[in-house]
Picture 1 (tube, rainbow, N blue to C red):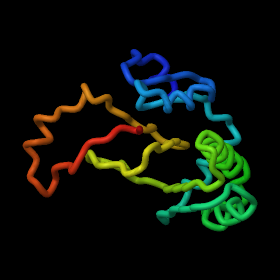
Picture 2 (picture 1 turned 90 degrees about the vertical axis):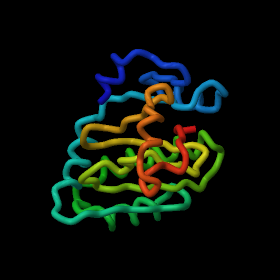
Picture 3 (picture 1 turned 30 degrees about the vertical axis):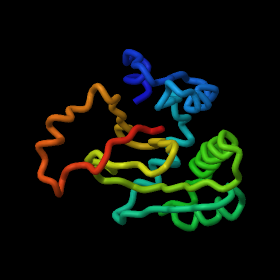
Picture 4 (picture 1 turned 120 degrees about the vertical axis):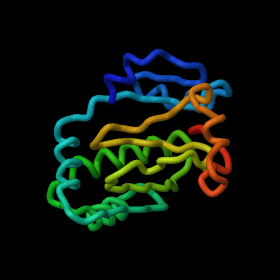
Length: 169
């Protein structure tokens, strides 16, 4: 994923860099997505892959401080807790970064093992900002507004049509 993003042409309303300093750009009026590309260190990749070697679907949700209780609860929910240290540390780092960015101690974390796209259709995102991280698999895709075929969406049956479109901010 990093390679594709790094070579993609820049679009209006997007900020991209391989340094964490790009994330605060989400507060700029003209920016609605801030992308930090990063190579995933081998220990984190191995830890994440270990959690995917399971037959059962699993998920984890947390709303609160990123502290020792968070780590312990996450470890209890992971299918391979003995191989989870690097992944847990990285998730704590990412969650702490978003908490710092928004000057809060309470963050919401949702972690899922997906077998298909999480958001296969357009939807309304009721959060002012969402941070998305992909540890295993093809990555996340964001479409700038000009790339959305609104004519095709309006032809969907009402039950399948989106109620609204949104960006990451």
